[in-house]
Image (cartoon, rainbow, N blue to C red; front, side, top):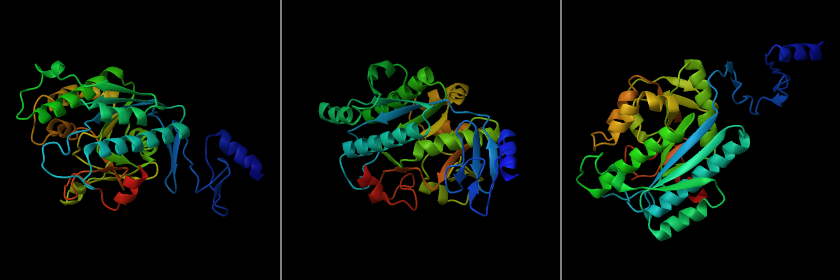
Length: 321
């Protein structure tokens, strides 16, 4: 009778939980294993099952890189006080680890990556090419001339270059992406499970909300400096909180890029205060969330409110990459 009941439940699309031996007979798994099935259902104990209606088909990653400037617009040093190429290279290594881990777990999701390089010298670009030699990653060299008549004249060449590389990133994503897009800067270290968690949590939460969303992989310290209200959501293997500000590392969909293209474009035309002014305007209308605890670590100055996420072993993550 038990076997028959399991077969009927499986046929009807239900999952059974046997708490006596901590297993799911319909899934043929113990409850400490991954119970969710990508693009089909998300299962989180004890909350049950969410049918996936917003499936993720592909992820397009834009890695924005400058291997020379220590900290843009500041005279401070980053955590560990190394040359900028150290941060770019370790950031890229950690991203590749996360990409490959996700590909292994979710082989049916297409992941493509491009690097927007802001005029790295030969030595640095040689190091980057060596890191990606076994990966299908394209490098696009930033051409300032394309933006001379688009971006307003800036006080420094660094500010102009930053705006130009961001606009190039947005344009490339708008032209090439098909589904989800990850914009990522080269001073973040990523946990190996970052992309896997982003993809699985995106489709779960977007399916529950019946709309596309924005996600930020970093849990910034500034989020805890004021007593702002927030909502807590359950992702794949993490809690996520609603936020109304991001920097320029975030995930969204091609649909939302097209919907808010004016905001993306205006972000890059001048140095605004705050820099992400027009991006933050979007979050007044759309849901944006970040993980608790962090999936990515922003390696800026240790005192920066936009930097180090709480409760992370910074040195361990740095050494691993």
